[in-house]
Length: 360
Image (cartoon, rainbow, N blue to C red; front, top):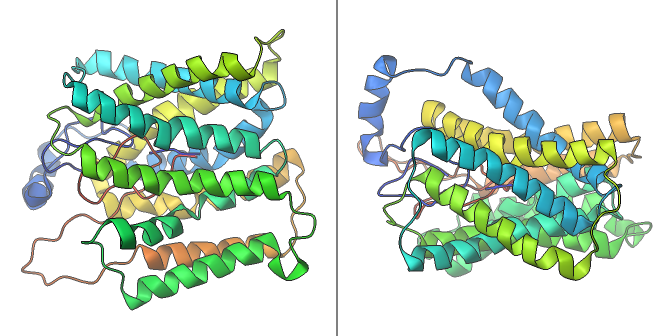
């Protein structure tokens, strides 16, 4: 699910793009003071928050249904195509300009692979053999992988005792979900491994983007739309090499793929950045903790997937660990705090602290 930012300091790369230009962190107080005069969205932010949680939570169910009628690469290509169409339409309405630098396009190509094409395809292949509930829980491990990588790759992101404890708690939760004490009996190891690898791709992509796409001069929406376009091109090249053209278009899988792309990969990123812009990254990132809950409920209620006690228990432990790994030491009131990590599935993130929640 994703898949995946915050107000930018210069010009962000982005995960889901904000509908209005991001505000520099240093100007957050001024922006807050001027907020009443700004034009507010028609829907209350709480309604949009709930909608975003539902969209991303149901993404794993939609992947599962899509793979019942199409090959995994076809599901990924369809969702990227539909998601790109939504963002291109948004770019046209706002008259956004595409990036002009060849260097930026090169880095966006790598970001498209790490944050869209590869994890989306891995989740599609994983759900051929594992329940959508398990895929949703595997997706929630991404902050745990992110902390491990940040220790190695991001020297400014020093681990605290609480965050290290969160890492240990989180992986204990993963072992509980997988039933390690039973020797992983009844678990499809290849499928589960692909889902975990997909969740690992997101922090790798975030770190890459943080190091390469700072200060491009392009808007968040332009960078995100460009990245999804590149991911779509990548799947357009790969899909014919591994699958043949579909001979039929079954209704339910087709609608699932279109909804997965238009809502989960297109509309959701616009919703998320709107939330970041309006209520800030701290509140917006709370959507992270609803995704696996909704994915589990949807899989059990609508797909009839079996649920043993260790799955919800382990998922709760994973979420507690993920929350601890995202904690930051409190700063003094006199200091200007930088925004905390923002959930985001996916497309691109700015050079500062950016999205930590993958787009499913």
